[in-house]
Image (cartoon, rainbow over all chains, first blue to last red; front, side, top):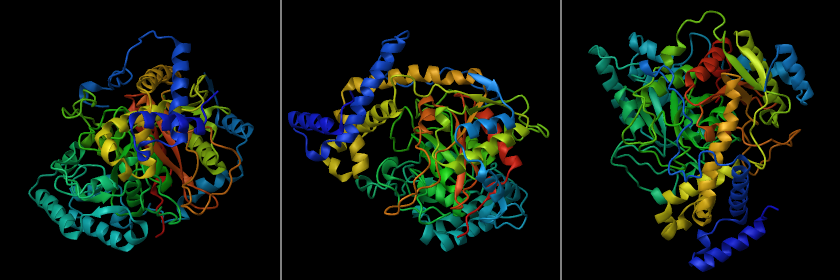
Length: 76
Length: 510
């Protein structure tokens, strides 16, 4: 079950208290829920697809490998 | 999965999908009625495309000062209503650049198609010694001590910078004050709001913006111009406030695909100051577009359109669907092999692309603003702060897994380009009304963000005008997309379409 905005707000408040954060440093419940639920969906996608090329932490985004079109004459 | 379709069978598919064909003729027929059709030889200078003005400048039929004066006069007339500028440079500074451009031409030094062309810059792009405030309280009074690489390259090519244009705060916060020149009660879209509105309104011949989740293409679609998000890394981001460095893209908001290509030819190419730029010295996209391909310039190009039940046909606006179907027919008539495609946009368990974009964008902007977040978070506007805060509270694996999922998702999504060269689809809707006004209910909900898929893949994606809505008479648009690196193909389709239609030459009445 996805985390609700209310549940996410409560989690954020708990983290904020533990870390000594100000209210202005906390995300809204809806925003935090989107992040937490997104995390679960991404983990689910990885699990379904396997990790043929990993696991690896991406330290930088490597664009999909392509041959630059007509790179010999500087076209792209 | 691709299947061959004819124009007739494609339209039948549209009916099956619930598209209402009644207004189909209206957007296409709008080309010369609402707004001033800019097809004749008596057009004011401020309405010209770069390719046209550049030719007049090169042949000394006009001067850069005359062109600058035309743009300045237009700005004096409309800026109070449109509010494109965060910081107009003013007549003295603009005319000084134009006079310098004219001097070079008189001495026989012509720097190329941008020589003497008035261009605006989104106010997140650094300009040496000139305010760059990004519509953010944290950067009030900020004067960078260098020009962004894209600015330096524009200036070296002879462009005349006319000012800094309004942006949503740091490309992702509170809206800009800018109004849509087609209907001042509507938003111009964002985040490159001023560059879009200003180009449509004739205050500049083109604007430069940045695009993370659509910020070049959204205002271009809303304002009836051509917005080009390049393949990731073609244009340097050095000297541009970042939002999400693995997604951000600097690109033009212009009046045609050809103009957009001219701008990227100048701004693009590897930059040692930006390690994410592609290892390509430079680009010659415009020259490729100008090759003579005859009366059927898209012969041999396979163009995908979304199948009836595909994610990319989940569009709330009937007008957008109808104009898109008409555009697909035009593209077919230009020789393209148009085929219906079912995309793999939301593979299980994904229910929204935000599952990837939110952790990625929030974590990257959170990291960029970490020092400010610790001490001054309250000075950001609520929408921006929410993202920074989210990025700094989410666990690290939210970011890492989102990037890993992105790579897996991208590999599946891009398989569509095993079947087609280019994929086109309508955008969701027309420009929205500004609050407190509310847009009327639509016959169906959106299936989800139509811009983000191409941001996540790092693909070329070009917002291309397709007409005007029947009731509101505001712009309609489609996106022309390709696999990363295939910018030339996407531009070819947009350019050929614009060669056969006049939608991109419509101008708002102001």
